[in-house]
Image (cartoon, rainbow, N blue to C red; front, side):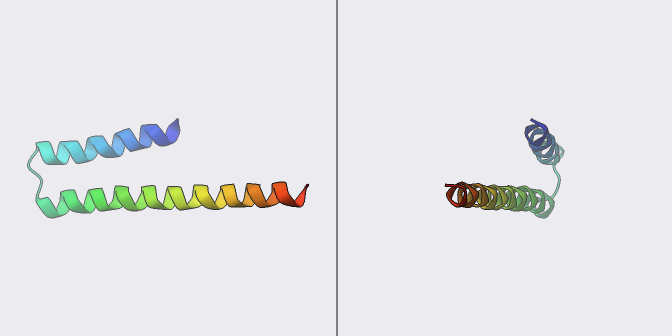
Length: 60
C-alpha cells in the first residue's frame, strides 16, 4: 500500500508540473525517473520470486 501511495504522490507531482506549464525537459525527466523506479521494482520483485522458487525446489 505504501508503494501505491508513493506512486500517487509522484504522479501528482508530474500532473502539477504539466498543469503549471513546467518545461518539457523537466516533465520528461520526472517521468523517466518514475519509469526507471518501476523497472527496478519489477526486476527486484522478479529476483525475489526466483529466489523463493529456488528455495522451494531445494526444500523438496
